Image 1 (cartoon, rainbow, N blue to C red):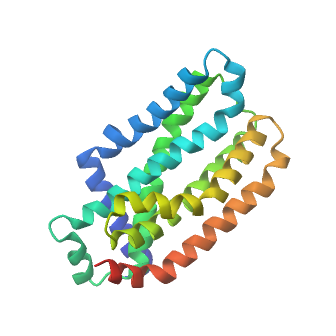
Image 2: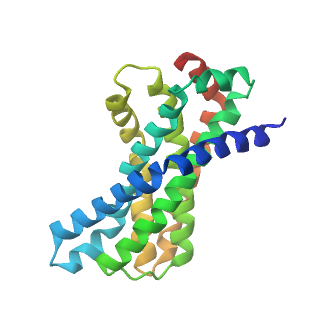
Image 3: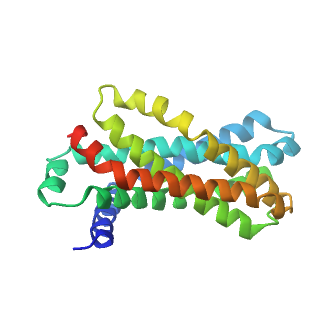
Length: 225
């Protein structure tokens, strides 16, 4: 069985579990929308302010939802010996990393669509550079999912992992938040040419942490178990 086949099996397993439990639909997406609504109420009635800060607020909502998704991704492996089952199955650590990252990325993409619609409706945002917005979202989502999966398995072997995960993960994701916010600002403002350097930075970050995850996840997974 090749690497991609194994990764697809892991991703499918995680997504089926989420579909049955409906945690993403019942908790993660509502959480993101609540964040958007709270900022709308806090900054209302000045809709000009809402439109200006919309890119940053959007990615803050995604980032906070990522913490929930990552915690959930590794919590499901503690039930009924699921983690031991993956080890016994002989799955490659790189495949487990890619599968879990893909499942987290899929959940984030669903969240981004829903929250994005909420931001457009509530904040009065007009989209001008749709292409750069989509590429930014893709690169940032891959970077967030890869980094979250890597640090998720690192925190899984520690006590108080629920509180340690944000402390480990948030500083590392600062470049993603900066790049995604600036690229969104330029895209929404109709100057996509200024956004491409930020998209490039996000792409490099995504490739870098994906490569680190593929190389290091197996050892971290063994330590966590």
